[in-house]
Length: 283
Ligand code: C2E
Ligand code: MG
Ligand code: MG
Ligand code: MG
Image (cartoon, rainbow, N blue to C red):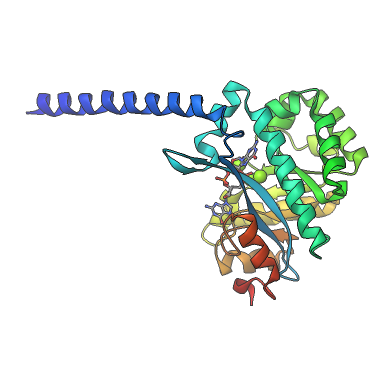
């Protein structure tokens, strides 16, 4: 009996592997065409000022509306895009869309809205990055200080010397730099002195456990104090409950982002949210 069970499991396992690699192959083939076929979308997640409760900006988060698999989140295709190098094209496309859209919001009267865009390792490595960004800002006529580039610690540290140079150029252009998923890297904090960083984005794993785990709340309090003393702005990701919000509010975190306010949504829906007197959850 147990032998049968094992054989069945094994067959099932082999079948699953087969299906997974078939899906991967399909994704890989269709990813290259996704931009021209207009299957990529940018979703926007509001970023909220903790003191006023109003939306001060958004983070651009890419989605792929796949003809067969439906709406895919980045985890399903960003790694693949990385391996194939296609992330460069996706990144350029997202940045352009995000800047165009934010300029529309500015024109509609929300003229201080910021836009945060994620930058991956390969994008940061590429010599054309500064040119691309400069061109996109010129084409879309967005003021550079509205743009916040999100880079994770591990990407920054991958080639620290090169990163410092690129970040200094970005800074000269007036662009802001945020460390994404802060607290999950394992590098020495001394890089905070070397890199011209403006914002720390506290990883959402800490916000998640703030109320139930005293280590997490201590870490969050400490990151906020660290940001204060270094003159950096600090933002908490993944805020889902009023309790988490209250803790961060007491702790004087500057900004927050999370399902409590809104999930990432399309541009039209974000615009409706902007026109509401106040984000409902804070009232
Ligand atoms: P990230 O930059 O850390 O983005 C935050 C992620 O947390 C988003 O997932 C967002 O939907 C999710 N999130 C926000 N609030 C909450 C919350 O309250 N609870 C929970 N459970 N999750 C929350 P998403 O959109 O699936 O993106 C995942 C990652 O994919 C991003 O992490 C980023 O690293 C990457 N990514 C997304 N768009 C792009 C892009 O255009 N370019 C690059 N290079 N990477 C991207
Ligand atoms: Mg991010
Ligand atoms: Mg993050
Ligand atoms: Mg992340």
